[in-house]
Image (cartoon, rainbow, N blue to C red):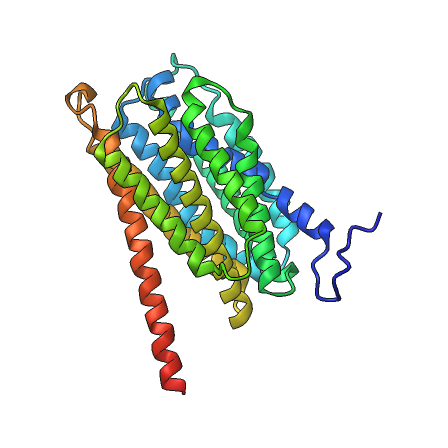
Length: 330
């Protein structure tokens, strides 16, 4: 069966789209587990204190941030995206499987040394896979519409793999991932007037609404409100991610930069800031936690709302600069 679209010579084949969409599922699944359950595993299973657990997570983000630009440079220099994708996947498989292999009886000092090595292997491999996969978007896409399609397909598969986890502790993340998954599907078939900037703005507004809802307060007995907030956060995360990646792909294609370099800079900033925030949150946690029962509720509210607000302001400044440049050129 011919999997190639018959819409014209500039169309991107269905085989390319399907293959590309499947190329990052394993990496995203490992990342989702890393961010959702690693701190829980460190603190509850291994009995590591919150500060040390935050340092380990921060270590992973720093290593990822450092490895990302190096991976981008190497991938652009060698122009062997598929080979590096394979090598990175092997490293992720080994490193991630070893993260959850220790028992609580292990000596504490050995735990820190062990995880320093294992996290390094995992994060370096993860960075290589992500950059090699993202840098394929400008290479195989024919125009901006194809870049948007590939990005939406990538986001759809990214959220789909988490739908199989049905434990109680994953109920809220599951709802969030389902909302993100459905949003990514919708963005794949978005209307022509919904540009990337409009989608980013709408996603940021959803994030602000979720943070305001959390700030107002959610009763412990009101599960439906908790799930509604999870849905808003899922929609916000998916919309802003797809829109930002589409804007990045368009920037790479229109300016002729190496995809690996640009995506590595974007990822470096993302990993470094998120790692610093996690470490800050863990260090500011009350001890015992019973003294500040609403701590994580406030963290989620203020950080989500603050990031959404920064995104809206940045988008407004970008649009203002584009208009000013247009007036000068005219």
